Image (cartoon, rainbow, N blue to C red; front, side, top):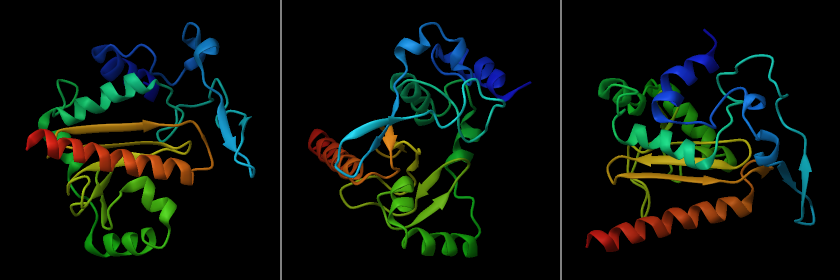
Amino acid sequence: MKLGDFILKNICRPLGLESTTKQPELLPHFEEKRVDIGIRNDDGAFSTVPEIFPIPTPDDFGGASLYSTPREFTRFLSVLLGGGRGILGQESTDEIFRPQLAPLVREQLNAQVNTAQPMKWMFTTGNVVNFGLGVAITAEDVPGGRSAGSVAWGGHTNTHWWIDRKNGVCATSFFHHLPPCDPGVVSIRDEFEERLYEYLKEATG
């Protein structure tokens, strides 16, 4: 079974995800709904660039080429926040959130991440990171932001999400342009996180 077929059978259909696929060319009205990838030019204006992966793709890549919508992808992430909800068992979900790196590897990773801010931004707004299964884990509480144990990931065209189980947060920000870690996006995303946790603090007293 190809990866895309497995995702369709075990994730998309049970969750009612109708626009999440490895084969977007098969979706009705795909061409009308698709959003071109942009690139920020030196003058700050945007122009479009070709798709990063060919459509149709020759294979189902594990780390890329999944097409979806912000609403559907956030619905999938909410499943992880909720402990699996029938798609994954609680034990499997917990394993995704469990730090997996050996101490030496973790030290080397953090030394690299903290000298490469764009890489760090894709993983965490904190200063110490670990890796779970397919996710980056924030290892310490971020002042005014996400809690230790939160997981996150970022995408090449400035998509980003994080899940903070301690505070019941599943948050996403979706842009669709290059270069990765665009400073304007970084500023918006950081302010989004700050304002979100300010609201939570006020709402909970």
